[in-house]
Each structure stands twice: as C-alpha cells, then as structure tokens.
Length: 375
Image (cartoon, rainbow, N blue to C red):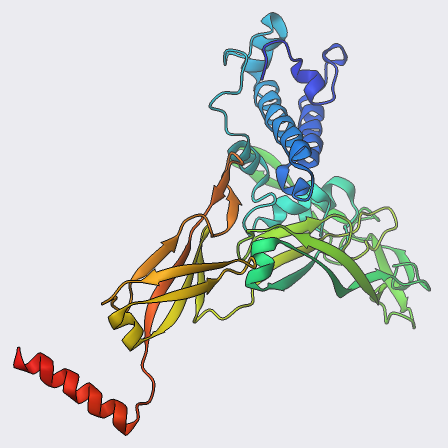
C-alpha cells in the first residue's frame, strides 16, 4: 500500500470529522465484508484482483486507526510505523481475529450474526431491544464434479414470516410488566468491586416486551407462519466440506417489522463415494482397481478426472497394491490465507482387483507358481 494513501478515506471516512472508535469499527466491518474475496468468486480476474487489494488496504487501515497509539502517530505525522505499507501484514488473519470464521470454516455463528444481522443473540437484543429473525442453515450435497467446477443451484426451504393476522405479536397483547416493554431486565448486584449491573433478555416475554392475552387463531400464538422460499446459491470450486456461504437477510423474518431478517447459510457437504475418493486439502485421491495381472506385467490406465479431462497413466510392471501415482496439478484449485492460488494433485492409489478365476486360469497360475518354486 503506497505511503500517500489516506487511511480514513480507504474506510470511507473523513479525518476532519474526527470519527469515533465505534464509527471506525463499523466502517471497517462494512468495507471488509463488501470487498472480502469470498464474495467475488464469480467475478472476472481483474475484478477479483481489485477487491483483493482493496480488502488488504481496508484491513491495514483499520489495524492502524483502531490502535490509539498508532492512530495518534498517524494523525500527527502521517506515519503508519510500518514504512507506509502493508508488507508482511496478513489481512485474512486480522479479519478472522476480529470477526471469527467469516466466509471460511464452519463455525463462529455468533460472529456471523454480528456481521450480517442474523439470528437473535443476546448481544443483539441488548443493543436494539429487537430480536432479529432466525438463521436458516442447510447442508448442500456436492458431487466431485461440483467441487471441481463450482456449482450454482436453486434450493427450496421454509422460513418464518410474521403472521398477517397478528403481525408477529402472537395475538392480543399488553405491555410486559416485568421489563416495562423494553424486552430486557436489568439486575443490580453488590460485589467486592462495588455495585454491578447486568442485563439479560426478559424471560417472561422472551424479549418482545409484550405478554399475549389471547392467542392468535392463525399462528397459534407463535407470531409466525411458514412460507416456502426458493433461493439461488453459488458455491465456489474447491470448497471444502463444512465451509459455508452466507446469504444475508434470506432467513426468517424478525417478530418486529423493525428487525432484520436472519441469514441463509449454505454449508458444503460431500456427496460422493468416500470408499473410492477422498479429498485432502487441494489433493484428490482415487483408489483405482487394477487386475492383478496388469499390475504384475504392467499396463496403461485412463484416469477420468472429475473436471472432464482424461489422462493416461503407465502402470509399471510389478506395481504393488497401495502404490500412489500423482498427476501433478490435476487436483483442486484453492486459495491460501493470502488468497494466492494453490493447485493440488490428482493421486491414484493402486488396489488389486482379483476376479474369480476359471479352471483354465487356475491351471496356468499353478504353472507360474511351479516356476517360482523351482528357483
């Protein structure tokens, strides 16, 4: 990153407005999610490169402006203390350190909810007194061809939408007397460190601020009805089992019309013959059955790669079972933490195929055995 670039401008801020730490953090969240490379897998190479560079700049800018000492030095002297560049700085590690899993490995759903406004954590309730809609999580079965080439498909699922009769209230209601309609209860405790206050969701109204007097006949008091939804999703080539893609606001509705929808989370699930194929990072291993006589005398074998290509492999005479032969760079294409491309190998592992033999075959096999025994 060049010396002259304005770190505030990179985050969409102005130094003259003296943004607060919270404003800087919100700006970083917005910009890092907007430019995260995993959101641009289907873009052109030029666009991917553009977003990748911007993602790095955004993370580096926030690493300076979120640190009071570094920010003061930058504000006074325009010096980042890093030679003005992000060399050696890992924006992906920095992103994970602040927001958990992000777009990568499965897990960290509290962080995902914070980033995208998903299902109702207690922190979201305390901030807004509104419970967001629930996330919908679905495992998406993927064939080897899907994993090699990426996949775009339509999925059907059900979401909760506010009941049109009671508008999410669950029926006729009155204000909760325990939380006075706030949805949260504050408790005061005397501790050795003085008086401490804690807040938690009101257990009497489940954070809604309302008590139902008469249940709605349309939704049975739940405030929601089920609705079918169809969504087109896209998972990139090389995706590993358990990794996921998040589709913001495509989940269930909030009980309140002021609350955000939950998210739809598409989780990759391998759907192929695992007794024959296995995936280890970018490498793909296929167990190939070879007739024992071909393994003994040698042969040529055509390997069908799941990306549609065929490669001929020479099986040397005397090849033993368990022998592995690697086809270089015929595996999956992945990205490392710095978003550099990694191309794996397609590895075939030899397995002897011993068919049922006829009487004539047994006769010749005995002759071969006798030849060995005479040595």
